[in-house]
Length: 314
Image 1 (spheres, one colour):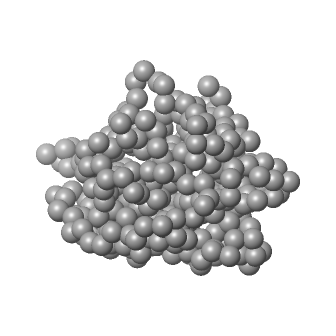
Image 2 (cartoon, helix red, strand yellow):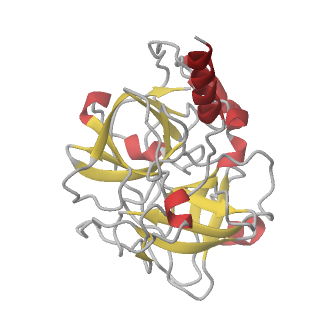
């Protein structure tokens, strides 16, 4: 009986100390197996990256928040209304043509109730999975930034399976591509994008054509604080002006502004996310969502993924 108790405590301690934002396989050097201007990502380099698909086709990126939740962009689910049962999340892979994809179902889609299609303010959404993710070296949650302030972030990257150049008829990629990013001064970016709000940040790469594009929406702007050992979800790929224009940044949803929203809506769904625990361990039964208002139509003449699905709003 004592041995069983010790084993149980060891198992719980291991789960409790599961860290977010780490890349164990990539860190060991096993990274060799186009986002615009990008290069192929290494195996295990972005273990939080997921492909959100509808009708078996990639439509948006997303990131693993914890074992129950995927975080992505609200505009990915507007305006078409499909049931969550027609949505799937592919995780733990760089290749969408792999013969052994791991696929999870979705039970709930939650959009921020103040999402504005006109200026893309509050472009954030959560997907609740139908069963918890079992983490391993290819599937890891990404950390949320715990303190405000953009100046501390270094070595930022985006990744995705989206188009490598702008155009409605351009094909999506099947291999995960990555590109380096640098966070821009907000006031400087505001001069170029007057619709910018304080819920957004700008990132690009000076004198280079690195960018995110259609199909990359919802993915993470992942950054470190210098050490490179722990990665944080600083921004959600949201919108931009064309793709890959030199010295023209992309626009991202600023994650540091949404801690309380994430906490509130995940608690209402019965699968609470607690950032201080890094990876939630709730075993509560999911509750039925209480849907409320639909965002008003209208949209910018900028690149966006013209996406999908029904949702609840909070």
